[in-house]
Each structure stands twice: as C-alpha cells, then as structure tokens.
Image (cartoon, rainbow, N blue to C red; front, side, top):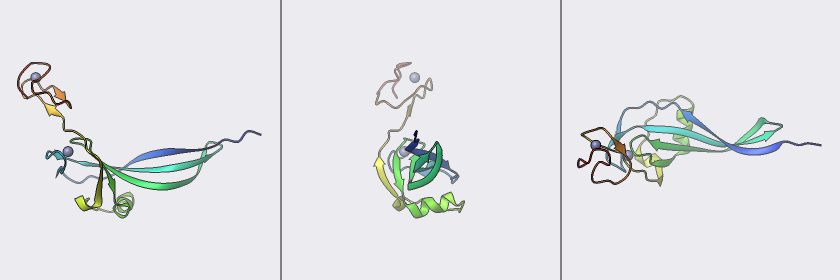
Length: 122
Ligand SMILES: [Zn+2]
Ligand SMILES: [Zn+2]
C-alpha cells in the first residue's frame, strides 16, 4: 500500500500596512513585512494538520529578520490594527542596507567605498 505522508513548511505573507519606521539595525527608513510560517502535515497530498506556528518580520530596508511576539502576530493575522513595537521583536539576523550610488543609481549590498559601476565615491 502506498502512503503519502509528509511534513513541510508553508510561508504566508500577512497584511501589515503601517507606515515607515526608523530601522533599529541600519538607521534607514523601512517597512516591516510580516510572515506566518507553520509546519503542515500532509496525508495523500492534502494538508490535514497545521502546527508549530511562528511569526517573522523582515525589514524592507536591510532585510533584517526578527521573530515576532506570537500575540502580536495573531492579532495581525486576524486583521486587527496593531503596531509592531521594537519590544515585540527578537532579532534573528541583521541584514545590510543597500547602498545606492548618488551618481548613476547603482545599488549594492556590498561594502564598496567607490561605486563599481561609475567609480564615484559612495
Ligand atoms: Zn534596516
Ligand atoms: Zn555609480
């Protein structure tokens, strides 16, 4: 008999449309993107059971990743208007801000002192 049982992770972006914040990591203006990740138990390719819910936040300015307080995450998932504060977040990984050349507009996440495209100082 063939049994198709499996567990995989699913990721879903939640609606969170608050305004710009000042990023505690890179100091630039950015937005929070909120993600819900859960593990899904599959039986015959149908999701039958979801568990291990986690909420993550990613910043648009430097791609830093935070774990979000589950209570706040649930409120966002339920469509409540909440504002994410820094104390709701636990940093998991710091990202790096994109540098943008003021002369030619070239964007890079590397730590170049001079623009690799046009040679002007960044
Ligand atoms: Zn940032
Ligand atoms: Zn340039």
